[in-house]
Amino acid sequence: MKQIILAYHQMTQDQLFCFRLLSDLLGGCKCVPLVYKDGSGIKIYMFSGRLSTFDSILLTKLVFLCHDRCVRAEITSSGSNRVGIALSRRYKRDGAFYERHPTIEQALEQHRKDWGNTFIANTN
Image: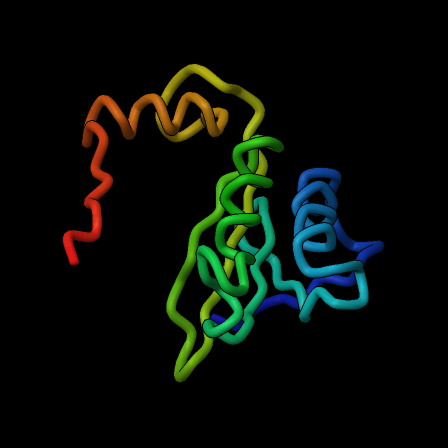
């Protein structure tokens, strides 16, 4: 199936909301790669080396922004050294699994219930 590239003026309000999240994440509108239609949301492709939890920190920022703004993100494979990031807007903090998006505090609370404190100290 051929993917549809979206120009800014072609995006719905929900797609624009997701685009603004990417713009904030990546350093401005001009830093966002080509945007593709993905259901009611959007999808971009980028080099996987830019996504990490600490040194580049983009992965952590993506998670925080998505939880703050009620946006679902999905990381998908996309060939050698590339990943896709699909974003779709959610409107509820509670409700059915497929329609809600928790705050970071709610997600952390659930994580701690499921996993406890999983910190492993360096024993060297």
